Image 1: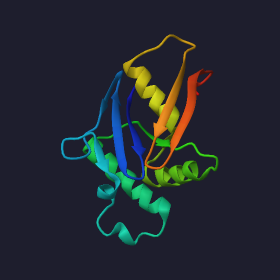
Image 2: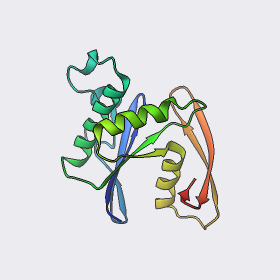
Image 3: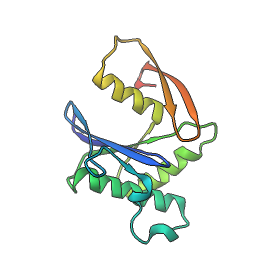
Image 4: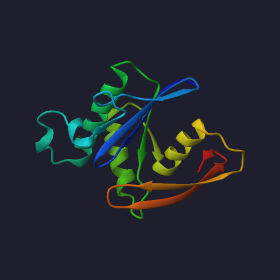
Length: 151
């Protein structure tokens, strides 16, 4: 396994983790913390940006810069919210494509399950109930192993 950066950019806060081989560690984004307020990730002067994908792409670039200290990685993965409409996935795709060469999009419940399973492995065939609690919503998903990894 190579090096990768995983980013979870939410409305209020952002987190990132870096994989080096089999080692996965949270990145320091704030003042000695593993998270940063989303508003602090906006580049100076970006308040006038009317394009959601452009503003989100700028925030993703800021996260990568803070997390990696400009060291390159092979892959950047971005977690996106799973909703009845396709808006969050489409925004994540546009923003990540503007910020990174070949980004990988991961549904947020799958990213959460992967993080959990990395630190607390479970027997094959297990299902995980993932509760994703955000500022104004709660999402519930069952995640288990599929033909292509977690699904």
